[in-house]
Length: 153
Ligand code: ATP
Ligand code: MG
Image (cartoon, rainbow, N blue to C red):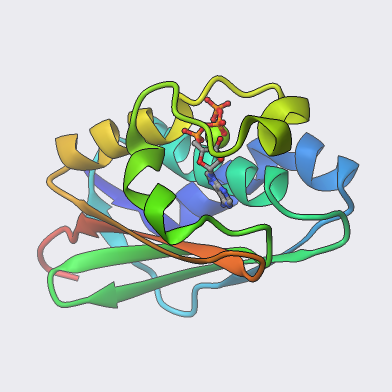
């Protein structure tokens, strides 16, 4: 089903409003072109909300999260970029495991289950998409999701 990635980002920010406001975060969306992907809007919102809440949770208060929506080849691209605590190189492949949380001491107060990214990966793969993580400890994390574009746009 053709679905607007721009609309998915807007809905997801609305749904993540509480944690965003509680931490006084600034969200900056760059989505100059309309990007229509093939997918289930509610599930893609679930993906985006998880990434936005993670970006907020694993950043200090008053930081900025950037969300970019673009096209690349046959894919719609959504990037969620934070200036948070980052993920150690060795831990990056493990964050998609169910119940895996990096360094309990750090994550303890956030009350998560460690299921978010496992669900994200499952949903992205169900859409024949791709997920790419880049992270630098102490500097921040970028998560890029690619979802096949709808034809004829
Ligand atoms: P929940 O199930 O509530 O989402 P969670 O956030 O702990 O709990 P995941 O979203 O699966 O679980 O993330 C797994 C782990 O990866 C987190 O506990 C955290 O250590 C790390 N992580 C995820 N996103 C980020 C991020 N943007 N910056 C730094 N670390 C992150
Ligand atoms: Mg999470």
